[in-house]
Amino acid sequence: MAEAFARILGGEFVEAYSAGSQPSGKVNPNAVEAMRELGYDLMSHGSKSLDELPDVVFDFAATMGCGDACPVVQAKRRADWSIPDPKHLPPNEFRVVRDLIREKVRVTLDELGVPQIVT
Image (cartoon, rainbow, N blue to C red):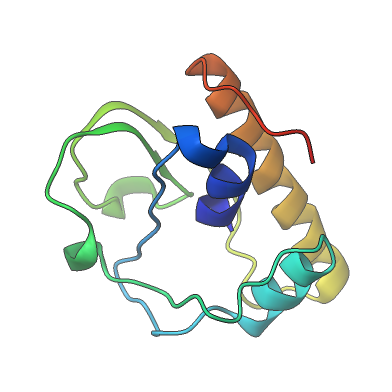
């Protein structure tokens, strides 16, 4: 969801990627539904491995509550957003996490000086 929000809000000014240490290969159906509620279609997206990320130094990398098990991704700036994993949450709690991710992305884009598309 963070990748989608970064691409949606940052438009042409953002190149965003998301990846995990143990990807399932498909996007969580709850994430697809939560984003659909906002008018975004994630049906063609898939979960990706960290090995699939470009071998570059990113301007920014966010980790989400991985604590000591965070993978190393080269970035000029980084933050651990300490966002709960919504994988098994009921829809109403999943939406809360979705909205938290959207707000974190908005704030980060603002801090990086990226113009944002109003949605």
